[in-house]
Length: 276
Image 1 (tube, rainbow, N blue to C red):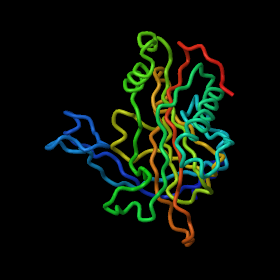
Image 2: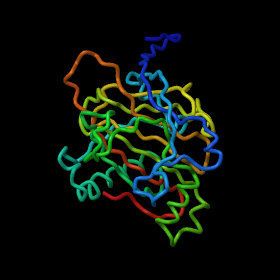
Image 3: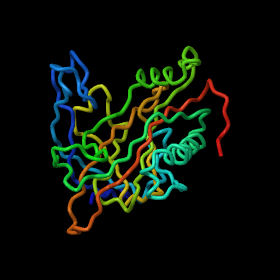
């Protein structure tokens, strides 16, 4: 525990992976392919190194986070979904993604929200030790990273809306992530967020001297939303990573299960009302 003035900051020491500094990345961008590449082509060129991190619990002050200033916030979220529904792609798309889209639109004051990806993660009991076999579900990502760049988000928006491709660049566009657990409280591999005012996106993903935050005992009705890219760069993107919590002696901790949604948020170029 660390005290700063009148504020009590509860710090956890943990660890995560960062991209190594390597001359290779002056010639090509880091990448990891989710498909088998042509023979002779490497599946990934990522070189990692592990660093200690100190993560502050924001449970007591979660309401002080301001998305427009900090690039991240914690929202209350009540869904019609049952636990079993998250294994049904049709229900996820018809119910859950519409709920998330409407929540983001209301909260951000956006004109249009377009979900383009979602991922369910259920930690295998052996993770982070690999079984050597494909997992049924995606596993937590223990690498500090940002999902998108502004250029990528613009290209995706134009690809999804070819009829508006020439006009999209004339309006503000954000790429925003939504993340919540399927069960709770989360005591296993929670998500940590890096305060965006503490990083330089051009260099700091290779270091570990950053300000990390997490929400202790996160429940399924508590959701993180956080910025990944913005054509109006007043706030840096939010780097994030899963991290292991120190053992407390409780061996009955359930493996983390979560769902994340990636969405493009438009502030012009569309004429749309909220769907009920």
